[in-house]
Length: 244
Image (tube, rainbow, N blue to C red; front, side):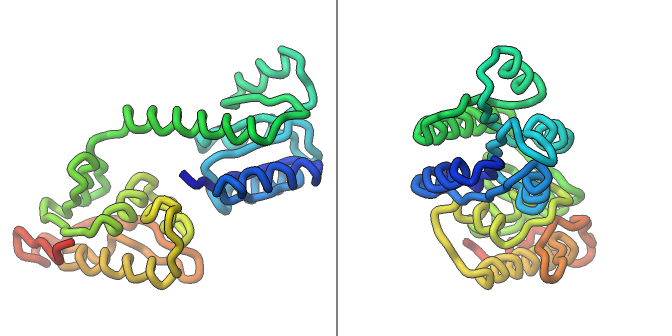
């Protein structure tokens, strides 16, 4: 599955080698030259995985990891020229998922990323709640159905994927790229207008079921889940909307 991967290393040659290897395998990349730039990119783009060089100027990889771990469990792989056991243990103890010593094989890095993401997906599937509930909105992940104040929303598969992604991270601001990844799994590229159309359809179905506040727009920035509070008088019971 294509991922967005943040790579932070102060060596431009290493960044170029990793960038080539990741893109060759279908992933999107974000490149940072130091720890401060890495944190800025992380906060702006919310990557799926982070590769951190331990020894970087401004902030080293260990400090970046500590900050990231305050708010996120995103997988992190450390790169380091040091092969001492104490360095490996420290990197893993502060929240790293793996540790690779330079020089390393780009193919091995790609393989390790695949192993980590498969493991993370398995854990997420095993621990994910059956239902996501935000206000009056309820999303049944196993049945792939959604309702608003018990009124069913007849969402298409794409609309369901977008709304579920928002409900999984309430308050998070999604740009169109992130919603595109949620809707199409990175397999298809569509225009921003297509995402806007999906959002309009979701809003229309939620409004007909009793709430116009399920999806909020921050113009020029993106979308996020709203209060999800239904007006019980706004729609007749049993509203189903359009059929997929």
